[in-house]
Image 1 (cartoon, one colour):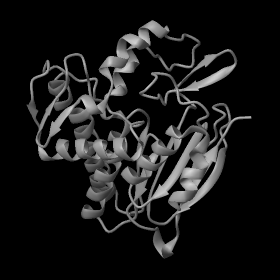
Image 2 (cartoon, helix red, strand yellow; image 1 turned 45 degrees about the horizontal axis):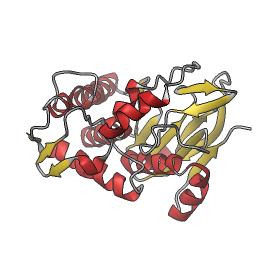
Image 3 (cartoon, one colour; image 1 turned 30 degrees about the vertical axis):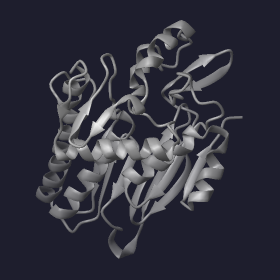
Image 4 (tube, helix red, strand yellow; image 1 turned 45 degrees about the vertical axis):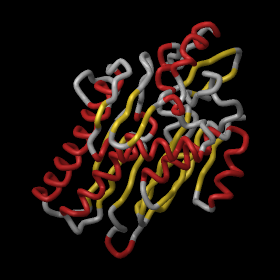
Length: 279
C-alpha cells in the first residue's frame, strides 16, 4: 500500500477488534498481491508480459480497467495507467538525479491508453507497454476493506492505508473522526490542518516523500504522460473528501494533473478540499 496501514475500531471487545483488524489486513494483502506491479505471479504481470497477445481478465480487474479508462477521458488523457513505464527513467527518492531527455523519449512510444486494445473482458498491450494500477489501487483497497468492516461489525471503524482513508460511520454520540492532514514540511510533526470526518473518505496526493530536486525546485512524481516530465505548477499537496476513497482519489489526482488550475477544478466540482502550495 506504499506506507503504514492502520485500522481504528471503536469497540470494547478485544476479540471483535482483532477480527476486524485481521479481516482488513487480509483484504489489503489480497488487493496488493493481485494488482501490484512488483509481483511476477498476478494478473498485472500476465498482461504486461503477454507480448501483444490478448489476455482475458476477471470481473474485478475489468472494473478497474473501466475505471482507468474513465479517468483517462475525464483528464483529457493526463491520467494514464500505461505511464508507469516512465519509472524506468525516474527515481523519486528526494535526490537530484534527473533522467536524460533521450531516456524519456525512448519510453514515450510505450505510453498511451489509446494504444491499448481493451474490449471487456480482453486486453492487449503492444510489446513493451505496461499497465500500472498504482494511481487507483490503494484507494480501491481502502473502499473494499471499509465495506468489509461495515459488514462485519456495527462499530465505527476507520481504515487508513498510507494516508488514504475511509470510515464506516461516525463515532458514538455522533462524534466525527478527527483526521490530521500532514504538513508539506516533512520535518514538521504537527498536522497542517484538522478535518472532522463523520462519513465517507479522504484521499491525499502530494510530493512530501516522492520527488526529485533540480536547481532548487522540487519536481513531483506526478508525471505528464505526454511529455514524460512532472506536471508544471502542481500543488505540493491536495486532499479531497468524498463519499468513497476511490472517488476522493480520482479528484485529488485530477486536481494535481491540472497544475496551476487545481484549486479552480476542485471549486468547480463542489467538494471539500484542502490544497497546500510551497512558498
